[in-house]
Amino acid sequence: MDASNAGRSARALELLHSLTYFVPETQDALTEAGLEGRAPYFAGRAAPLGPVGAGVVAATFYSFNRELIEPLVPAAWSVLSPEKIIEIRYRTLDAAYERLLGAEVLRSAEMAEAAELASIAASQIPGNDGRPLYSAYAELEWPEVPHLRLWHALTLLREYRGDGHIAALQTAGLNGIEALISHTATGKGFEKEFARKRRGWSEEQWNDGVDALRDREILDSNGTLTEHGHDLRTVVEDITDDLALAPWAALGEDGAARLVELATPWRDAVVEQGVFPPGVFGK
Image (tube, rainbow, N blue to C red):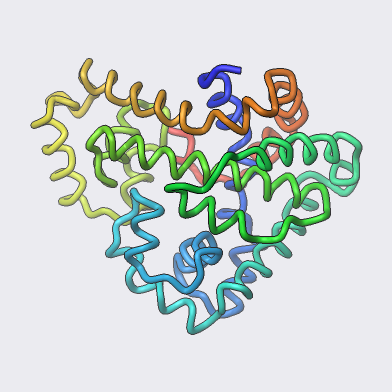
């Protein structure tokens, strides 16, 4: 299996992982337990790291403004322990999957097969060097229920890939806001205003980032990627795919294709039910 096919497989499945950041079951439960504003996202995703500070969260999440995080973390840990947050997330994710896909799908042979295939891939991740978020999730116990096992495996694969993506961005010399701006300029990521506001950047900070990318001839005067900018983003994605290849290569071409075949209708069902807000899918 080559790296580009592995990357396509990973991207095809990512929404089945990332729905946890948008479903009301999880957000409402964490809010009712005392987390305010955007804290359910930051503390929820970072909980496996332990009671870390804003600097660690900003570094591992990368494209978020630290100023957005600082009022929320580490304050969240005085409200809920990381262990309690993890428990709430997995419990509410169980309920969200049942609401979105139905009990029949969750108990189907297809779900069990998908969970097994994803688990094979995730279990073949070769190591945790330079992969902090992956390493944190890898220390959690594997769920036994197939749909939660699928989510956990996809989360391991996603955070492993995400850690490698940050390494690729660093190699390309793109800091957090520059990575976000150049990604939106591809037309394949978040819409610009959704990205800017969601990641906590002011218009002034965003415009400064655009100017920096123009100075490096990554963006042109219209804010569009130059040829150099396109080439740089292509290199970033190629490095990301290369660094995330190992578990997919272990699963194999047929196994990955079967996993995507099984999971695509579930992903589409989630999207059709409006889980994700406008702006997530770009232009």
